[in-house]
Amino acid sequence: MVIMAGASTLEKEQISTISAIATQKTELEEFKAGVVRSMKQYNAGLVKTFDNIDAFLADLHSPE
Image (cartoon, rainbow, N blue to C red; front, side):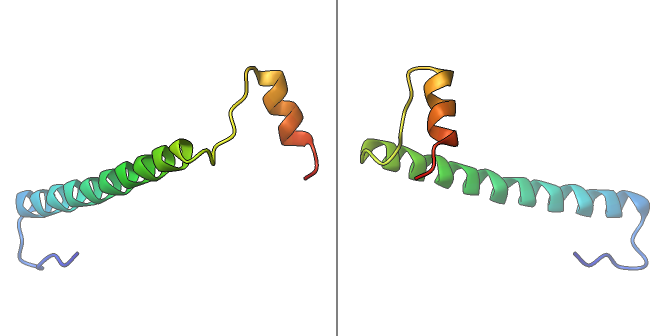
């Protein structure tokens, strides 16, 4: 981000806010794309599910 030396404090704050909003929008789009990928993997049977925490932990600690 480039801030002009002569910009007022208010202008600098506005530029900073706009930059933050743009960053949040990009991050939200990346998150949404990740959720879509996860749903596709689940629907394709690529995601392992467990009935309880003990089964999950046993699988987590088992060597494969």
